[in-house]
Length: 476
Ligand SMILES: [Zn+2]
View 1 (cartoon, rainbow, N blue to C red):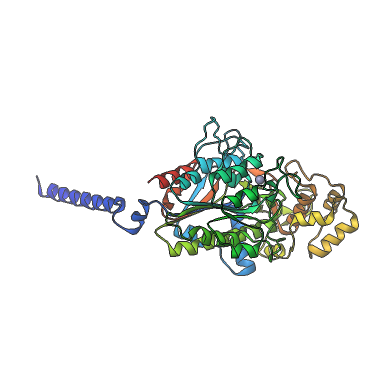
View 2 (tube, rainbow, N blue to C red; view 1 turned 90 degrees about the vertical axis):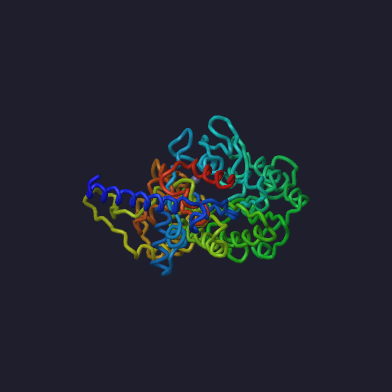
């Protein structure tokens, strides 16, 4: 062997030793904090879901928070910066554009489902959900939402029905499974038929049945913060809870309020940990109404709830996993360059600026509430009064006023509520925050993950992988 060849061989050996060393360092479960975390099952799992929120919903809330409040957001500033970011597909088994039932089934059970199906795969199989596995492991489980507690997203994590509208069956299933904490709206399905507000078709008094099983029942914000016991049922409205803009802050808890109570409740005296699903429904419901102000307020409120979990993570960094995600995007929302008048390509184009966030901040009510104020027969006077009282500085174009008075559906893709969708167009004309549709879109959504196992959620994945990663973390 020549001297040159010997030197090369020595260098090659050295390179191999370095490579092997770094491989062992990266892979070894007993070296380094990050890898210790990789080999563990998280004891505390938070699944935050902003229903209907795409990346633009978060970005609008982020920019709004900076411009209007000089604040950041926990999800991009803390969870994404310190943890992992992934993107997941959203399509259902039978449609490129999903609904919340099929999407949440994929994320809770790990299989594609048809639109409307809850916890039942396209091939008819019924796998256990991640929350059912967590329960079997002795973890406490909780569902929190400002929608009805039986709505598709929470229901898919804890139940199996062929149609998301079988609300009574879903609520009965929660009792059978023994979900330790249920906080949300939807008292109508817990009251026996004949009682004011009941939607049940039978005489089952489900609140009484939960109390008999040892649950503490509460129905307002004050009771929520005082509640004690081992199991908790909180139903804060007959149907969905209010949009953040319209919420009575003395009586009705926000999602962050419910999150704070859930953490206290699930952590107390609990040696095996918990899995909690926490949803803000309103990026979706406000998206269907093309209501940008309500979406931003809902997302900021959702982010505050994630911030509470982040504080918990800081106290239990080696035992906690936080996932902040969505099921699909609603509305195809975004700032754009649009024409001032719909009179043709030569009309002036208006660019969005930071001033538009201040205009959005001046809107004091949701478009749902605005529709209620206008009533079913708006007049020219009532429309002018609404604009004067609630949309100061906004201009209502004559064609949109005509649309409001005739209650005409604005377009084929803007159809969920003629009044709200027309008012949404009015807000868009004044702020350049336009909607592509009043329905769901096929966009992928992000998963922000922090803590034990968070690296599994990195990269571009199918939404069924979300459940598969949770299964593998739970089964370690
Ligand atoms: Zn929706």
